[in-house]
Length: 102
Image 1: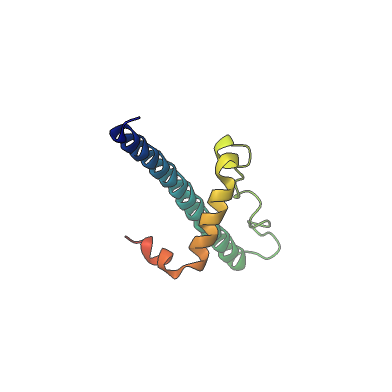
Image 2 (image 1 turned 135 degrees about the vertical axis):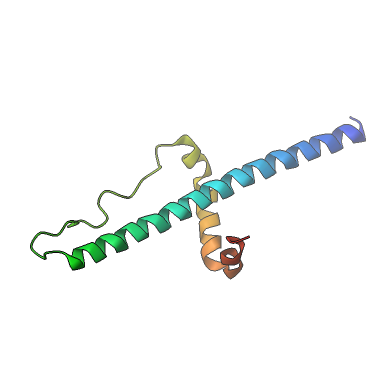
């Protein structure tokens, strides 16, 4: 094998790894965004309940119908550990909060 071929294979491997990392980052960003939206919906429902007739709450179950589970997607199963690692990293690194705005 020639050096040029090895170098080309190496860069192809790096490109594939970069694409996969971008995919994981995208999925994590979507997951975090949907989590934020779910929290906002629960807060709004809580506010509506507080302003409503206590005997007939419009949202007796604040969270019952808004949470989505993705366990049945093969891509989720494939990337589950990496997604969980990335989410945990985002929670513990303050720089990640700044990166959201870049």
